[in-house]
Image (tube, rainbow, N blue to C red; front, side):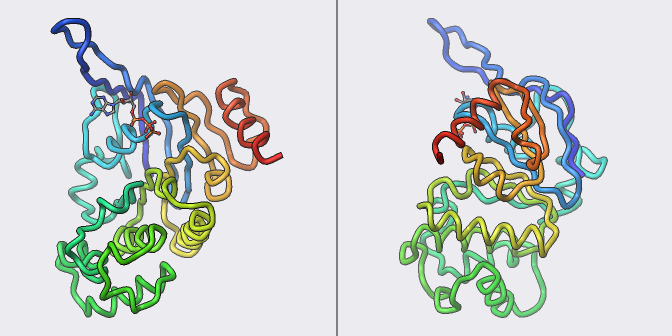
Amino acid sequence: MLEVKNVYKYYKRSGKGLRKEKLNVLQDVSFHIHAGECVGLVGESGSGKSTLGRLILGLEKADAGSIRMEDKEITTWIKENKGQMSVVFQDYTSSANPYYKVSDVISELLRAFGTTGDIQEQVESLLQKVGLPLSVANKYPHELSGGQLQRVCIARAISRNPRFLVLDEAISSLDVSTQSQIMELLFRLKENDNMTILFIAHDLQAVSHLCDRVLFMENGQIVEQIATKSLSAVQNDYAKRLLDSVISFHV
Ligand SMILES: Nc1ncnc2c1ncn2[C@@H]1O[C@H](COP(=O)(O)OP(=O)(O)OP(=O)(O)O)[C@@H](O)[C@H]1O
């Protein structure tokens, strides 16, 4: 479904004096994601995960290489498949308009894309799907807990039944028990709705719970790709270190 091939991305940042330095954020990144697959992208902070996510979402352009979805250049695919790709970011507080009621937040995309049918009914069914009581529909974002608000953001992201969902650190700001509830929700979406998911996270344990395959990113490069069930057989030293840190933490 998604094919990322030899992608490079750099930014310019202030160097010594007035000179700008080139910061190579992504270097020769290649991988694919099959339809219905859930792929985790893990790596230390600053390794380039979110940058790659933004390129896939068409929010920024790669400096070299290609990103194609169903054999079309990604921005063309996004234009031709409006609402079929969706994203949930880490920062749920700034993702929801504070002046909107929850029902308006959830129905934002439905209204923007001129969805027909009873919007109220669709909001209720989305609330049910993400495990929230119907009573939250009339509340404002600040009246909800972090976990509830992230569910609202997920409900909005899935409102148009996207085929491809990017979750960028979507559970990182939540406490452990809320994280596991959201993980269960994502697991259900993956199993029942057959969504194709790119799950960007620090948390290798969450990734191994949800994803079929894991990509390890170090300094802008994919250093290892492996099926989750074979995680213990990773070869790359960086991937081993990330894996060891999880195992030793939980021993
Ligand atoms: N718009 C930008 N301009 C300049 N540098 C940037 C920009 N966006 C990201 N960077 C730099 O690119 C590098 C990779 O950042 P990115 O956010 O993609 O990493 P990450 O792996 O997602 O990190 P984290 O897990 O902390 O979110 C970092 O050094 C960051 O400072």
